Length: 104
Image (tube, rainbow, N blue to C red; front, side, top):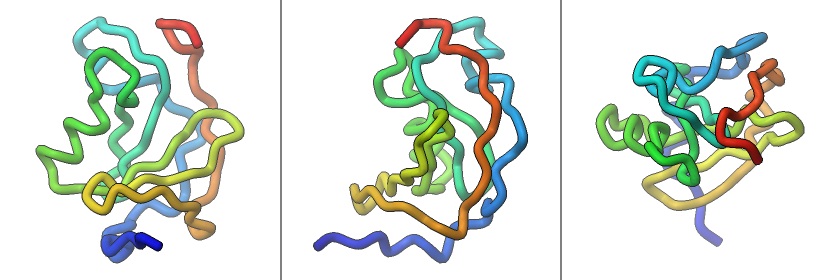
């Protein structure tokens, strides 16, 4: 079974109370589908189903491989380098998020 080899990079263990949306989409006026948070620095980006894929772009440009979904009811994390999903019990919280501008 594949395992993530980047767990030592988890710096965010308490999620924020709320987020305004994908940080880069908000700056550009674009929409997103689902939100992810970088577990190294806390940057909020949009998922791979969103037009701009900002969470993946941030991982590539920053070298921060781990994200966690901050969608209501979701607690999974993903490592872009090892391509493995996991649940990290040490990461807690469920931010209030706005509805997706693109629906779904």
